[in-house]
Length: 361
Image 1 (spheres, rainbow, N blue to C red):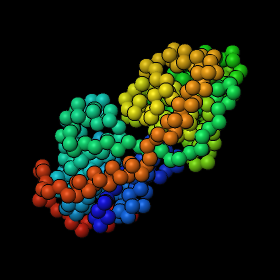
Image 2: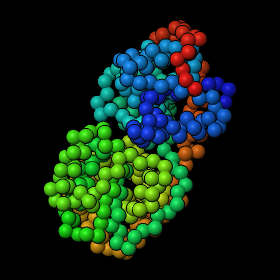
Image 3: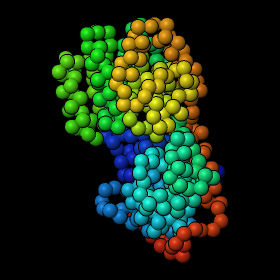
């Protein structure tokens, strides 16, 4: 790895905000910390909501040929920044998710990148379908997991856990509809961990629905949990349920398996890639509360099934990906962009060398 060349990591300024935890922010944190641990000079460029040209203004301050790792959320929100400055920079775009219908400007912006890092094979295939880059310029660096203690299953299997921002695209309304069908049972609980601020109306509607059937004490919304509190939630779970309507990968699924917790999830996007051992999970069609309810009924009715799923989850725990591997792939991709000769696109002769005073490290 070339540790002598600084990497300007351009990310949303919420990367370390404890109230705005997301898979993308956590991925960016781990890449930053992993690169630094390997001796790379990583200089953070934080982009807020200050104006429509925030990313362009930040890129304009970087010198020609600077090695830049840019979060794809910023590329999607301000593609003109990449078309204006991408050609003179050694730009690598980190794509966590893809737009269903990207604009021509967004696709053209990605083509200015020396390399694109996708967080799943599914994301890579979507980028290729959209003609966002040549195949050899898109690499995949799956999210990793940390070693974690194995969760001890309960006899009833009744402890459900969902870890995701509480919003329509994560499908907690489907989970609520499914568990309402078991309102007459008293041997289960459901803990929903994730931000409650992204869509307050959605959260309020879920609470109202649960209150109408007397389940507010059985389905608990914790808000964001991190560190020991999140570990405690995993330690008190028998089954992870993630009924997302869209998912580029499914980091919460991988983390549940790292704790030896079986998974019930929707078969969407790149989520199946997060399951190291297929027998550790049941995948159902997306947007299907009935299918979730059927699988939960089978789960609770059959102790042997629960034991088999738990055993497979323990296998998956040993077979999970590491963040070290993720960082190594990102580092190799940065070095490939650094080694590439020549520039492409308009603006190759533009220079703003030396204007880096707004960059934080």
